[in-house]
Image 1 (cartoon, rainbow, N blue to C red):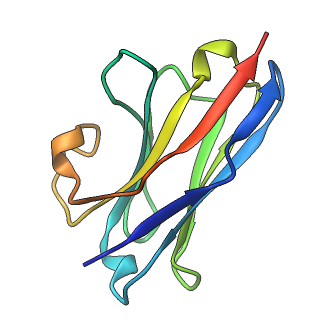
Image 2 (cartoon, one colour):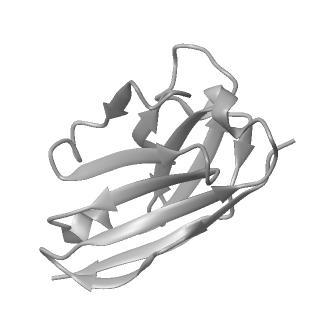
Length: 124
């Protein structure tokens, strides 16, 4: 069992930056692929970024590539999402998720555990 708690969301102007954190409970954090998804009001939850258990592989949605960076610290049971050059269209509720494996890291159904989300609002 893994519990995930996101933090770091907030209100920021376009062009600004935020860093999201996701703290995980449990001793097997390093076994999980970790992902970030986001969901805007009235829209489906979408993939943002993912990182392999070792941190050696990272994956990004085209919409955030070059602006967002995912990283993890297995000693601290934490995964991060550094978001730069934020745009109003990045506004959403951001979720952290953990997956025991599989190649479909970009799909919601691949993930076994989810956090409650942290709100990111980017003003124009």
